[in-house]
Length: 119
Length: 111
Image (cartoon, rainbow over all chains, first blue to last red; front, side, top):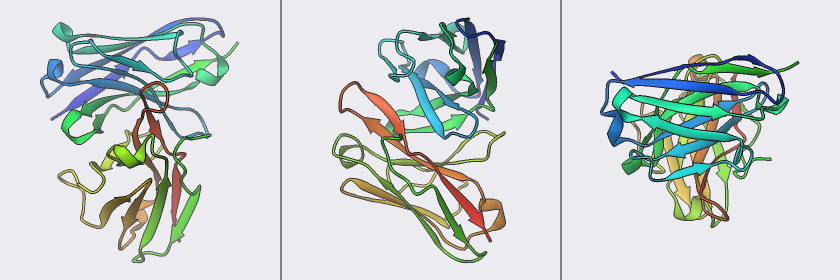
């Protein structure tokens, strides 16, 4: 069974930093690309970032480019999101999602971790 | 404002059929596969449709998808109360940078 478990969320002040983690199990982690997606209160799903299986290819949404950094540690089956210069509009539940290359879709998702940016 | 356009809400009585549209452009839907997701806040989003019309194992055949040109459609037949959720289309967009885009989401209300 595929399992994705996010952690690291919490309350942070505007301008602060936070590092999210996602631990994967139930599949060969180093064979799959991964993503971060968020959902802000009252808003829809927003894709944040993509990293290929070997970290050779990385994409970011315009809203976070230059502030957020995606990375992965295949030896530890882990995905990360380093978030800097946080703003109130970054408040959201953050999900990690496994990417199914052949099916061009996010086939498994975690339960999410809440990030609240507020003073 | 989302790159892919969906109606904010749709409603249907139990047993009826509902259609959710997703409108895009030649930079996204026309030349890329579309997927559809169901999301209840507080839970993990769920993949319903991939590659425009394919269902993952475990997804009932009440859910079907299609694509034509720059638009895609999700049909839900025999709507049930448990289908009340938010639905999103998604695909790659290559207009400037390569980014994944979701529609704005459609809230399905079961009457």
